Length: 424
Ligand code: PGA
Ligand code: ZN
Image 1 (cartoon, rainbow, N blue to C red):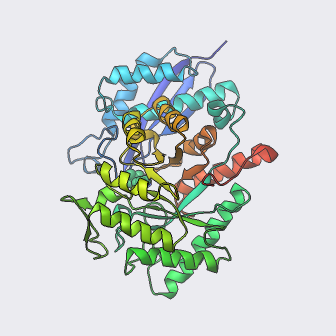
Image 2 (cartoon, rainbow, N blue to C red):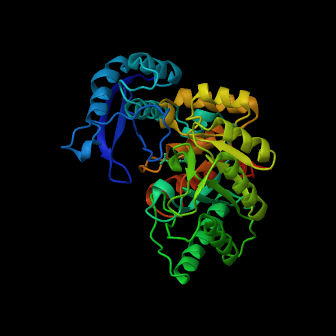
């Protein structure tokens, strides 16, 4: 007989930036207990599901989540108690109905997603299966290639770099554990190079270095130097992926490269800049190269370079089927960044991924810049099998926790584990 949800309890905890977030624990009638925590973004898309914060000035500068916690304990819990945790879709749709708004602003996406993730975890424990097998079936054996964000700028760092993320992808590694080693060694080599040049080696929110470089381009130069210094071949062993997060520097209808002092650009000039970069550097993926409302710019970029590289939409799609459908119709991109808390339930996230699969688009499972020690996305990435994960640099425990979990999964799968470059 299947187990039933006996108790649901949420509490306020802190994320990696010291801001409050929601952690939910679910207890089943067979004594199994499972928890999950909600992450939080800084360069959020305007159409994301709403993170409910308390407001006011007295607690955490208005960022408290006691209302969201109360919504789990007092409004969601009574409806879900007695339900079978394997009925994920039904449970998620109960919460969507209970919320009743298009962006989950009534109960809060932070409240809803923490319950949704905890339900999946409780069900996996009740089934006696690892979370990745429970969510993905026995065919879920592909360990994702990490996109490791080793140099941070934009809203994630107080420096002179406009583009938010410069990532390395160890595409030539034979296994996930080796990929992580390639990445960590390059990260350490980069530290040495930055120090030698007199730059700071302090890190940003996702654990990448945040130096005051002379230009955005210099970020690619120092990364290439680091890959070589670590003994790897740029483009063969390790490629570069970018997330400029262009919505964050798009103001008054223009792309304003103010942090670096590199002037203003329109979307044609941005696409031309990316074209120059992909000719010069081994860049295999560009996410949010244009702003979230610049559908026209995205389309121009995809038609110019979508055959050669991966064009990922994050803020423009916000893991929401409605926007992904438009993107497919308009050939806006060829891949989607997937963040559970952008849409707010596991079921809707899986729906967004299924849409990508059906269209032949890639998808990348992603953390947020504000994270917790929860490793849910590591299992989720293996379960969904897209072959790519973005979960930060080679330092900061909230990032490393996901990498360590992926190493554990790879070891557990043994010979059955698959690790291959998804961009071939
Ligand atoms: P965020 O940024 O988590 O701060 O929103 C991550 C990203 O843009 O991919
Ligand atoms: Zn992004």
